[in-house]
Length: 92
Image: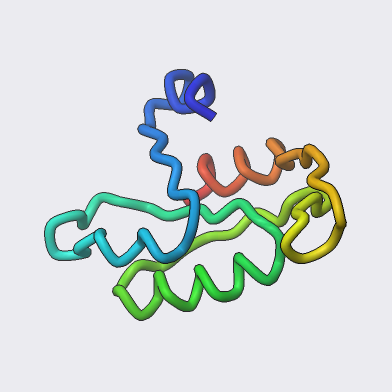
């Protein structure tokens, strides 16, 4: 993601869980855009939290879910749909 950020001139910050969104203040961060990249349950809850904080999030669903918390007994590496991510970045 950081390589894409360098190429297309945006900064990348990784928020590992929606609970850390509370530390963002829209009044101090008017130039922040949020693109959530996760499985559907996490995108829904994180997206609603971002909306409550005043942000308008965009979402990219993982190509498949590999989270041991929701879907599997053992974690499995997932992939980000980079084409969808670039579409959101370049068209907003």
